[in-house]
Amino acid sequence: MRVSWYNHNMKNATKTVVVSQSEYTQMKESIQKLEALVKHYEGLLLNAKRHQFGASSERVEGQMNLFCEAEPPAPPEVEEITYKRKKQKGKREEDISNLPIVRVDYELPEDERGCPECGDPMKDIGVTVRKSIDIIPAKAILKEEAIHAYACTDVECEKKAGRKIIVKADAPKPLISGSLASPSLVSHIAVQKYSNGMPLYRIEKGFQYDGVNISRQNMANWVIKCSEDYLEAIYRRMIGFLLKESVLHADETTVQVLNEQKRTAQSKSYEWIYRTSGHSERKIVIYDYKETRKQEHPKEFLKDFKGFLHTDGYQVYHNLPPDIVIAGCWAHVRRPWEKMYKNLPKEKRKGSDAEKGLGYINALFDLERKWGELSPEERYEQRLEQSKPIAEAFFAWAGSLGALPKCPLGEAVHYALSQRKYLENVFLDGRLELSNNRCERSVKPFVMGRKAWLFSNTPAGAKASSAMYSIIETAKENDLHPFHYLKYLLQTLPNTSTADIDALLPWSLSLPDVCRSLINGTKSG
Image 1 (cartoon, helix red, strand yellow):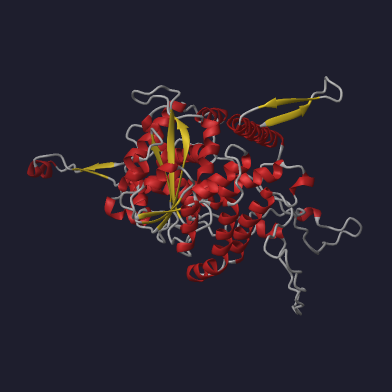
Image 2 (spheres, one colour):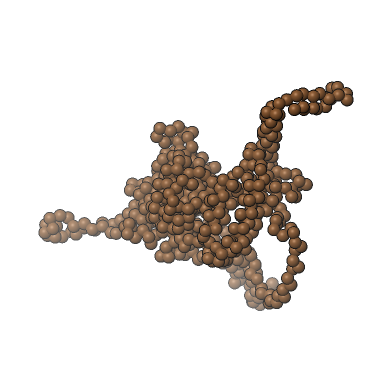
């Protein structure tokens, strides 16, 4: 075989080299590999630039529709609408409608109500009301609980009984014997750390500004003690109810624990997150600390669970018992196509493979938004009729591209095709969701908190954090005020038997009104 090329150093001359067919094939394959590597590194560079300088939103400007290109759009239907305009309450009034009102009247003293001209008494002719929101900061007080004891002074009674008769007044048990910790104090510390993302050293400093000296070590010890003695029962009961569900979500994220046995302080540990789906009557979020990311952890946690499990593409979820059916995440499939699309120059986006792939997946999500109010049975039927053909067309199209494996397009195609059987499981039940975003939203509070407190010192602290995060985030999911609910638990649990635990769970209707959140307009006592 003759291969010729033009030599720029020799005018009007070409150089011919004779190579064998096998050498030519090797050269061709080498060029293809190099081209794939160039595209791969170009993709990495563009992703890095967009990560550093671009917006983090996954939304794409414009509407992509691959399914009506061959026919003109239908003329819009004209619908006549008649209505009566109702006076709307302003947003400001709605925002303050749940706040208690303290009225302060400014009036003239009686001796100043005479007319400055004639001296006759003047009449009140109206009031101008202006509104503002006052904040009453938290206030620390030293609470003394004086428990009185009573003794019989009758000597004969003492002789008859053989002992001195002493009776103490009833009083609630202390939260931690011999400690200054109270239910409200521990609840405040826990909510500040686990809900508001404040590390203990900053909580310690905040207390000092108010003249209260509590060391961060004491705070950590109180949280661990309360978690082990009281909240563990609530946490375990919540897990029991979670595993009775038939549709769950799962995900995991890293956590650093400094003093784990036989492990360095730099070792990565993991927080596994399990939660109920949008169709569950009970809303439950569970955080489970483990030292590793091995398959044994979800396998052990979910050993009593049977049903559908929403996950990302992590391999350990694909080797769970056959009673667990994995529903893949279409949002994870969408992300590499969205990255490719945004990395392209605007003039090259139209008609690109990135736009086409994104169009298929966006069409699925658009249909899901339309079906938000449907029952699971209706959604199941609609998916089989409309969504499943789109998904099948997407996989057939992606498989026909022949994309090189190491380029961004090849990686996007490979991920989609490798996850196909899990992604198509969403069409098995109308209660299933198109993505695992619900669980990712539950991972976020932990990740945001981790940015502030950075690590746990001991496994006991990591386990206590898991219980606290579980109770606080489940309380939020059930429209409870995290501080008031946690305070109520710590006031009640020291004096409660395990038989009464169910009445204290976050979805219990017997919880007092003071535990209810004002976020959704629920009245708090």
